[in-house]
Amino acid sequence: MSSANFAAPREPAPRPSHDWAGLLWTLVRTDFKVRYHGTAMGFLWALFKPMMMFLTLMAVFSFIFAEDRNYGLNLLIGLFLWEFFAEGTKVGLLSLQTKGYLIAKSRLPRWIVVVTAPSNALVTLTVVACTLLAALAVQGRAPSLLNAVLFFGYVACLLLIVIGFSLAASVLLLRFRDLNQVWEVITHAGFFVAPVIYPLEILPERFHQYLYVWPPTPVIQFSRSVLVAGVVPSLFAHVLLLAVTGAILATGVGVFRRYSPQIAEHL
Image 1: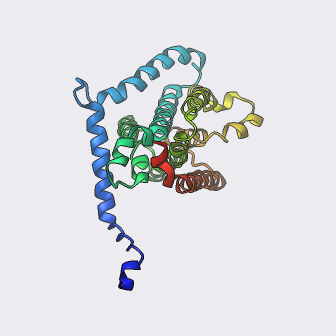
Image 2 (image 1 turned 90 degrees about the vertical axis):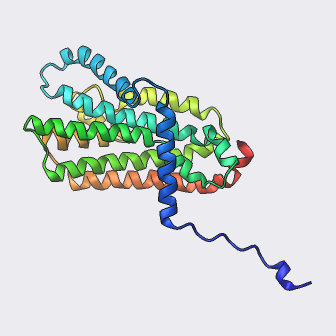
Image 3 (image 1 turned 120 degrees about the horizontal axis):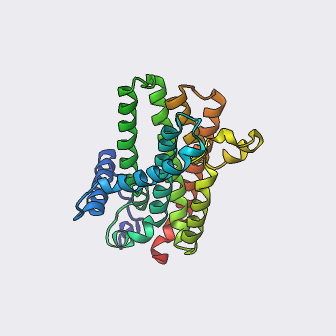
């Protein structure tokens, strides 16, 4: 028998980068269509929930923070950033479980399923962000180019944080089914930890460092600073945000690589 029969199986050729891009786009487009298929309002439903929440909170807390003339704008920024974080981590956590049929019936790379999970939430946030910048420009309060770029940089950091969490949590959920309930409790409490409905300044400064441990807090605060106050956070603050983002993403990638080979066994 020829020794060629004992040769190790040939590794599949790496997929070209443009194929990955096409696959990513297909999944994002499919998720978007499936979510709003057959609905009368379509994409507007994605804006309806946070807008109703905004109007309700504004009606209640605008009296408490009446002295803050920018309270409504700060609330809007904080609320939509928080909604992206909460929705993105939720769908990312459940991504492998809910799309197990897709993984089982195709050779689809598993990480793509997780990475594309928060796409609908990202589309909503992008639309709101662009609308907000346009509204500020109409009011004569348009942020500088640098501040606008920094804002979208903060959004990118939040996206990478969501992806990092989702990569780790999605594979761990298949082993520990209670993780979904645990994360739901954490996000409900985290809404009040992040300065969404209140200015961070109302709390004693000695507590600020603890609130900044919660990843949405610096993103919300920095976004408000560059868009509303027109103040750029310090270089050290940016370095810390990048370090936290990188650490969460690296941890997510590491956990996913460790446990992803056993995904099929737990689906």
